[in-house]
Length: 299
Image (cartoon, rainbow, N blue to C red):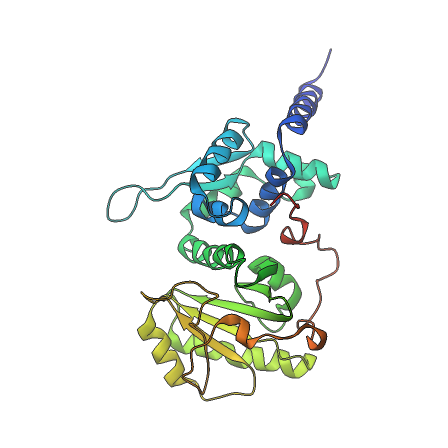
């Protein structure tokens, strides 16, 4: 007579067999991205995988929810009303990722309660801001291409000895490339603490001999101005920008290096590809390839 464990394994095998016939390569890539970046809104997914079309994204996301690979949560806003739909990996989706890697869920390190807990985290707004920054970059294909995106956890595994950025990215144009660290500021830290991060980036550059630019993006123009006033010019490329009514896209001419007031697009700070230095460090041993680098051609 089959044991409970055997029945559970059989159900999982049957489910994976069904999903193998229903999930596209883009679907599976989206599951990997959610496993790595934790939570997306519908707008994030639209920018990432559906050329900005939220209707098409919402239609596919609802199908993935019915397949039980994603879970949908629409939290209440603090001032009343509902926030946008938030999408998280569900157990079946985690089973797909584990199967791809030849692991059990336990070996994958995924638990549904932990995945869902991000919705109650005080850092949710910050995480959504970081993810929104990168997904908007991903959507700006006419200005350049986001060719790499690492989340905070991957950055910490690689550079925690020196810095813990909110993300690492690589922005390419046809002939230029920019590696960068992102510090996304939504006002939850003291300004003195944010300014102190520059010293950590300076130590990393001095140790590695590679000056990877650090991008400080502020949700308040006034806070950005105060940050710039509090920072003396340094040898490391430190670029700042903030949310503005006229230019809100991270690829646009909103970036100014410390010591100058000239606002320029992100691509202007890139180096010719033939001269581009690799970023300061390399992935920590044992890390899987980032989900971003496994994106399918159908995107």
